[in-house]
Every structure is written in structure tokens, then in C-alpha cells.
Image 1: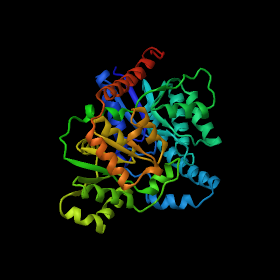
Image 2: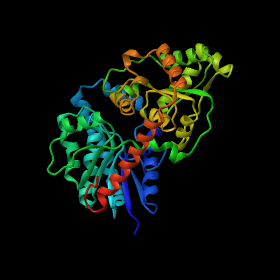
Image 3: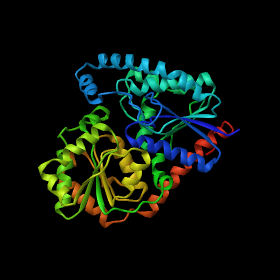
Image 4: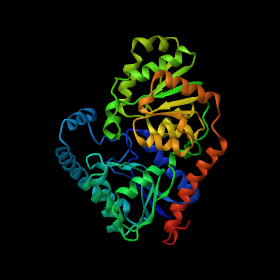
Length: 398
């Protein structure tokens, strides 16, 4: 019988970067185990691409932001219990006869109003019930766990946990500092984000000669960020695009797929300082990607990428394109540090249109270091192999 692996993540998120994680994980696993059966469980209760877990998300976030923290947790917990109760029979059926359940990747060990805490606790309970071994693979960990969140996240330690693989050193430190000690729990190790295999997964892409600027609604960033996020209505994106066009670069504004990001992108295209560049062909408003593959190939086609979204940066690097990461959350900074690219990250205090232009032009003038790039991809493959080895005979073979 074929080996069956179930991924707990957010594969059907409107942010196609999460789907890229899932696609690349499946690709890597099937490269190593060709007849493998790979199943996805979306922790937000979605069952297919295009499913909407939360309608009117911006309005909901604005309402939650007005509530005190304890009330916000109660409101979110009530809604999530309903969602999880409805999803539990499907999740239980998917776990049936599974050989391994994978938590990850993505920033799933983050406590925003107990959101992922409750989801991972429920998934952990079902894995225990099904007798399915588990691993954490390529997950990100935020340093924001509440006391209740710590208790909920610790339920993963009650599973038959074979390996804890986290995607950067900062996540490992945050896990060690926040996760309650678990009897016989494995020590966290570095396992890189599967999205780094995007070029292998989706194939080569011809370049368009454009600089891609990823547009992200600040309200979405602010809810998940661990630093203050400035809301400027997209002025930074507009200024950076105009400045690059003024220097003769062709620019494309793109988004990772979230409706809020797409709406902001379209508004930017109507701004007076950009409409002229759209008309003269220097600026393109890229179509909203409708699949993870579409997003990966869009990003892979740019000559350089500027983005807040982590997986826009990861995919750009996977395709060996110059990438400029913009500060809003430590996970983006951590990624650039992990690829020896701290000089390609602009922290929130350093971000400006001029700084972006300078960073892009530096990147275009210098190739990605091939030795570092090869090492990072090799480490990504090794992490997947290590995960498989951990369940092959019940031990973590390192």
C-alpha cells in the first residue's frame, strides 16, 4: 500500500503563497517517494481553492481591533469552535490510514487571538485519536504566545511527534522559549521552507524584463505583524513604482492573491502619478493569480522582486532573482538572514521609495551567489528527506 501523508496547513488560502508551500512539499515528497498519497487539510476549514473561510475580512479585522484582547479572544474562540466542529468529521476521515501527519509549513505557530492555537490543538487531538505519527516541518514560530496559547500549542507534544523542523533560527529560539517542556519531545532543527523548491516544482520561466512590486493591504499585515505597521494607503508602493519608472525600469504591480491586496493594487493603478506610466507601457498591473502555479510563474518571470509577503520573496529567491524584502514582520527579516541576504532586507524604519530603488539596482548589478543558493536548496531537500526518515522506522535519522 502506498505511503499516505496528510498536511495540516492553509493550502487553500486566498494568499497563493500558502498554496505554493503545499505544492512544493507534495512535489518534494513525491520526488523521493513516487507512489506517495498526499492529502491536504486546510486548518481554516476550506476544502478547495476558492473557498472563503471569512467573509468581509477587512471589516472583521477593524471590528476586532476595537475590542480589548480578552473579548477578542472569546469572540474568535466561539467562531473557531463552530468551524472546527464542522470540519472535524472531514479531518478525521482524511487522517484514516495515514502514515504521517505534517504540521507546516507557514507561520502556523503564531497566536493571533488563539487562531492557530485552537486549530493546531484540534488537529493534534485527532492525530492522537487516529494513532498517526506527526512531524512539524518548515513551520514559522512567532514570539507572541499568550498563556492560553501556550497550553493549546503544547497539545502537539502529546502526539507521536517524531520531528520538530522549523524554518529559521529565530523560530527555533521562539519555540524553545515559549513551548512548555514535553517529555521526550525532539529538539527543534532547521528545515527550510518548501517554497524554496518552486523553480523545480513549477519549471523554468522566461523573464519579462520587469521589476515586480508586491502590493499588500496594510490592514492585513498589521493583524499578523509583530511590529507596528504604517498604513499609508499604498503610497509607498506608488512612490517606488513611479521612481523605478522614472529611471527607465519597466515595473509590474502584483499581489499574492488576497482580495484586499488586489483591491489596493487596482486603486493604485488609478493614481495620477501612476496612470501615465500605465498608459505609456512602463507600468503593468498584473492579473490576480488564480493558482499557486500562476503566482510562482509570475514572480519567476520578473527580473527583480520587491515585496512584504514572505513567499513572494522566497519564490523570487528560488528562481535566483534579486529580491528586496520589506520590513513588517520578523519572519521576513529572518528569511533574509538565513540566506546571507541581510543587506537585501529593508527594515520598517529604512523603507522609502529611494531606498527601494537603490536596493533593486544593487541587486540587478550583482548576481545571486550560486554557492549560497545551491546550499539553501540542498538544505531544503535534506529537510524533506529527514522528515521521511523520522517515520520510516520510528526514529529521526540524522
